[in-house]
Amino acid sequence: MPDIKPFRGILYDRRSVEAKDVMAPPYDVIGAELRRALYKRSPHNIVRLILSDAADPYADAQHSFDAWKRAGVLVQQEVPALYFLMQTFALPGGKVVRRKGFVAACLLEEFSKGTVFPHERTLSGPKEDRFRLMEATHAMFSQIFSLYSDPKHVMDAVMEPWLARAPLFDLEYDDVRNTLWACDDPLATLTAVDLLRDQKVVVADGHHRYETALRFRDTQRLKNPAHTGKEPYNFVPMFFANIHDPGLLIFPTHRLVHGLEGFRQEDLVRELGRSFTIEEHPTAESLTSALVGADRHAFGLLLARSPKFSLLEWNGGKVVPGRPGEPQIVSQLDVSILHTVIIERILGISEEMQLRKLNLEYVRNASEAVAAVASGSAQAGFLMNAPRMDQVRVIAESGCTMPQKSTYFYPKLLSGLVNYSFDGRI
Image 1 (cartoon, rainbow, N blue to C red):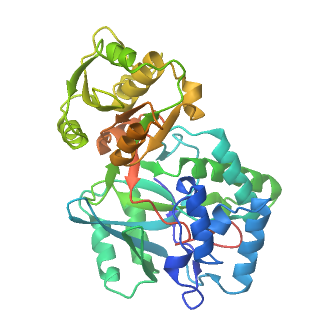
Image 2 (cartoon, one colour):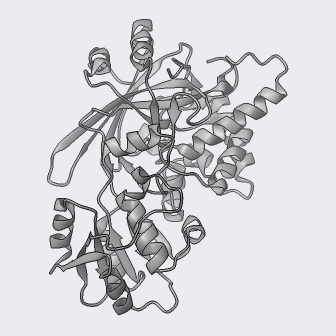
Image 3 (tube, rainbow, N blue to C red):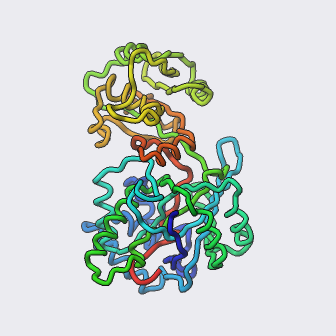
């Protein structure tokens, strides 16, 4: 079972700052323009720690973190607690959705060798960057997002009375309301521990930070001759979401192809016709509606000239998707078919080029993909359906991983809401 415990979070002092001004999304979705905007929003915005624009960003983060703690802007709580988080947001069409979960310190263990499993591959570059930040600050400023199974919604019953109390924070960011409570009731912790007994936890988001925390733990072990295994650096802050929560949503991540030499639209359409049934649509709206309703592997194809909007439905032919030695549960995913059959074999963008994001860009919104192709900044776009929740879990628990950017769990967890120290005591 995952070993969890309450911890003494480092929180912003509400008397010193406005919560809405100091929070930020995860570092990996912050572009240059957003970073500038967050810098202007507050001299204490968490972006100055997670993505400093200084010449030495890690030293600058350490300096700012220490200064904010001395000034009382960030304060470590006296009593260990679980942190209950509810995120409220509206879907297109107006339906209001609530996603609940709890944050606890989770014992670090090697992926797939215990009870914590990844579902996506990681890259070395982001891990090195996050490791240097951990080395400088000895802290983590956001949580690993994980999934567990609670079909009877036991934790909902535990959380419900606390959600009626005054929260620590209640702020809206990017159309998502984030409400946080601290629970120091030992019975709530015992319930969470018992619920996770014999479970396998799947990392939904934060793979790079989890692996970085493992590396940081190992370096601290070597530096500490009195190491016991109970020090805070043996744990990582983790948000646990119930896989049966109706508010737990996976959104698709769409693909844009750009800068390919010798790209010819007619050649692409001809090659696609060998393995896909191609159905033209008059508008992007018609295409996205057909894509959602497709009952087999399907993609939306966006091109600059006619056919501008097409539904691609996999008919297989003699083409075998996937890579050599890849398990069928992975090779039969929509994202695997797209990457191995279309992006690699037809378009010639190798796996290495994909990892380096050469000729390939990822976007969250279908409208953004449509606009990119229409403007000529992209040569082609591929719209995706999101993978199913059960696919993510089965693949992770089997020890396999999905291609990069296979899932987009919405909404993201805010950085700065609950911060964690690898030093001192939990």
